[in-house]
Amino acid sequence: MTVPAPRPDGPPDNVTSLFGDDWDQLEPAPIDADVWDSPVPLGQARALPPFPVDALPGWLGDMVAAAAEETQTPADLGGCMGLSMLSTACGGRAVVAVRGRWREPVNLFTVIALPPGNRKSSIVGEMSRPMLAVEKILKENIAGVRAEAETTAKLTRAAADKATARAANAEPAERERLTREAVELAETAEAVSVPAVPQLIADDVTPEGLASLLAEQGGRMSVVSAEGGIFDIIAGRYSGTPNLEVFLKGHAGDMLRVNRQGRDSQYLEAPALTMGLAVQPSVFRDIAKAKGFEGRGLLARFLYSMPKSLVGFRNLTPDLIPHRVADTYAKTLATLTLAMADWTDPAVLTLTPEADAALLAQQKATETRLRPGGPLAHIDTWASKLDGAVCRIAGLLHLATHPGDGWTRPIAADTLTAACRIGDYFTAHALAVFDAMGSDAALGKARAVMAWLAAHPNMNRISRRELFNALPRAEFRTVADLDPALALLEDHGWIRQIAPPARTGRGGRPPSPRYQTHPTITHPTH
Image (cartoon, rainbow, N blue to C red; front, side, top):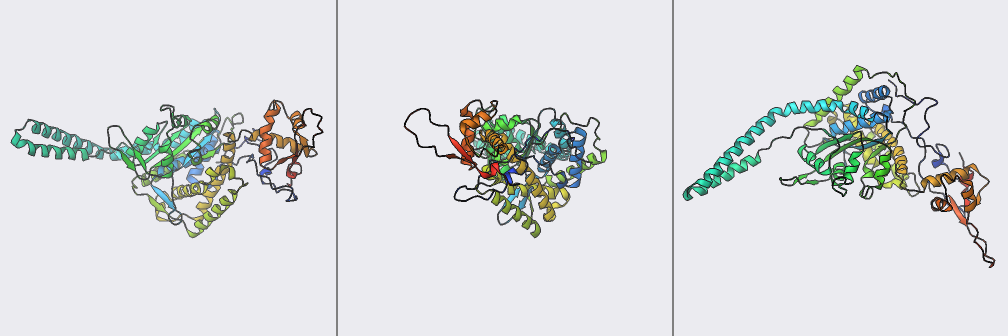
């Protein structure tokens, strides 16, 4: 089964480089270091890679590819949902022991953006359907225990109530003894615990409701939705103020205090929350404006995907998902989920020496890219969590490859390498998504200016007025619209202002500022 691809005459890339795919990696032309410093990249603007389906275990990759073919949706959608299902199955049940005290839980936050009409709900439903069957099995398994506990709770509460009544009506000589008996019975009744009805997945839920669910479900819960409403709820749709704590701590596994009405506070030592969301692209812009999301690090916890839409170029008679593929997916996911369900203390997954070496190489590459002027420097908050995300993905891939006994063997190097490939995929998309979020309003205009300058190599010196007159009015209505772009380009070292000539003293309007362009704009080396 192959993943559907755009036709040769298909839609353009959703993020297209102004200078070709390799513009942001161009080697600067030889220049005098005393005259020009190396410019800082404005950010990535390249064609985004497809989801590496072949990096997934066979049973999961086959389902992702088959679902993409039947629904004619990008494989990215099924791939992200597939990882979310693995996280739902294993989150809170396993951790990856990296080095020393470094432990990574295996729960993930993923969000993929596609325009309307891309059948997001169909894929979310298809990939999560086996989890509903597992929920049913878990409920059946615990039904007897719940019935016994409920009966015991009712009997002990009834006995405590009768003892209280006897003590209240007793003669003074008997009241103290009967009161002690009533208190003991009340304490016994209070100690009876009725297990919660098992639940693996929630949809849009308030932060307070989610905290309660985490408390009921042993600190583990998954929010899976084909809508972006959860972001509105986090931002304070009902409360008026953002409530991020359960999401921040649920991702990191930090201790969470849960206050539930009518009950004592409860502390969750290591909550494990999974988020698997499929939203419209406009949600990315909306959440970038939400108060507190970026400052407290919520946006840095998500793995982002923004694939091309296939709408308008779909095969109207696609191959259907083979029964064998769907059955294998459902059975294997159920096996994994049920095998991990009873773990209270998480399984500790270790790395082989070869896997550790592969991870160290990944860490070194990330560290280099985080340097000032590096391709990840402007999203350093997100990128600083990248290597941890790779470890989490590696843990999930390992358990999915060995669903019956993955906790008995270390993570192999090829699994870690596959996780690095998926990490590279999410990195490329994160760069594009943070641009789309509008983290720098001048970025698009700056790229438009650079595109014009690159197309006119003889204009290595140009005034602001000349540049404004040459650029399209649709994007630059006034000279003031050009100033933020010029400031950004100058700040990044792509242009610099030329000192104006000495004034003659005759008065009049000062000349328009003139700029010199960096040699790699007008003479890029490919």
